[in-house]
Image 1: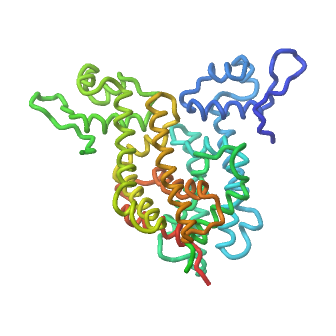
Image 2: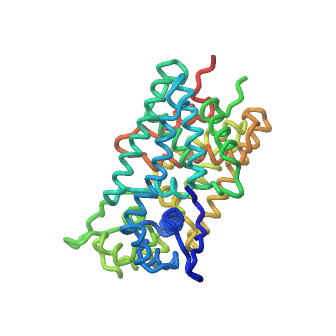
Image 3: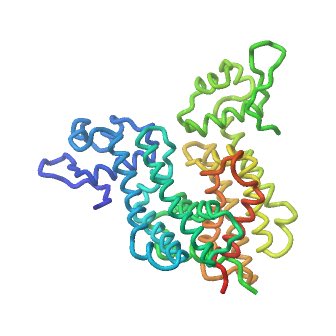
Amino acid sequence: MTTTPVPRRTGRPGRPGYDLDSLLAVAVKVFNDKGYDGTSMDVLADRLGLSKSSIYHHVSGKQELLELALNRALNALFAATVEEDATQGRAIERLEFLVRRSVDILVAELPYVTLLLRVRGNSAVERKALVRRREFDEVVSGLVAEAMDEGDLRPDADPTLVARLLFGTVNSIIEWYKPRLASSSAELGDALVMMAFDGLRVDR
Amino acid sequence: MTTTPVPRRTGRPGRPGYDLDSLLAVAVKVFNDKGYDGTSMDVLADRLGLSKSSIYHHVSGKQELLELALNRALNALFAATVEEDATQGRAIERLEFLVRRSVDILVAELPYVTLLLRVRGNSAVERKALVRRREFDEVVSGLVAEAMDEGDLRPDADPTLVARLLFGTVNSIIEWYKPRLASSSAELGDALVMMAFDGLRVDR
């Protein structure tokens, strides 16, 4: 799957050719810039340099584009929850793995995750995405609770609150991360795990 | 200053009377629901149950409402940076104080801080708010760097990155905090400081 927003040219000169992936990449950029509700098919067609009927050749409408984009982010996050390192070993290690993988996914799929995190539930597609986000959050709070039970995480806070603060930190990266300027996702993951798991304070 | 969105009645029956604070509270709610750009003066007048000319009695337009709302959040945050506990003592203690006070402000002024954190710089008023946000962020990264120099914070990460992750955690609270259901701001502050300063992991 490619994320390149630059349309590939087809045989027909002067007319950009898109496959579904590259069309989706442009659509997601427009949704993030103008808001999904504020983006009409006319605006999309204009930004793509396509007629609306050319867009309908790929998808049934902007709702399908939204669903494809949200699923791309959600599928990546759920795929992480079933990786070997997320399902074997102590809960604290599975949790740390999931935090690091989520940072990787956020960086790799930044526009898709950004769109997902701004969803407010204004349509059936958005509400379905919110249900899946809550399922993911439950996986996280389950791991936090398990790691507390195993004695590896401090038990002095509510697991749901801890899970929210932990993934709040992960998710807040979308607000300032710039792919070209900032740290690699591994450096980001290291700094985040250092802060949240081991604490910023030097032990004396 | 009151945040009550319920308009006070004046002598004239059947017509809601607003002072500037209660008018602002309703406007900020509409801005957060529909987006500032998506809110017209007609929509505002409709939600307030006022004529547009009654709104113009209080403010010059929606841009002034935005500026008042953003300044309310920013003034509260900057007021915290000059409190005694933020200016005296070791940098780590000043930083911890500023984190806790920011959580308090976020909870007390939730709609105003939410509006501030969604500003993208689409107008002069928004760009001015972004400049002040950056000034606040520089106060925070200055404290982080100072606390690293004083040997109280782990020196193994870039101070700007640490400041972003730390206040990213604070700011992410707006995404899920519900005034009536959730913890008090003191409980939130305790959990956040526990995670970010002392770490979730149990030392063995």
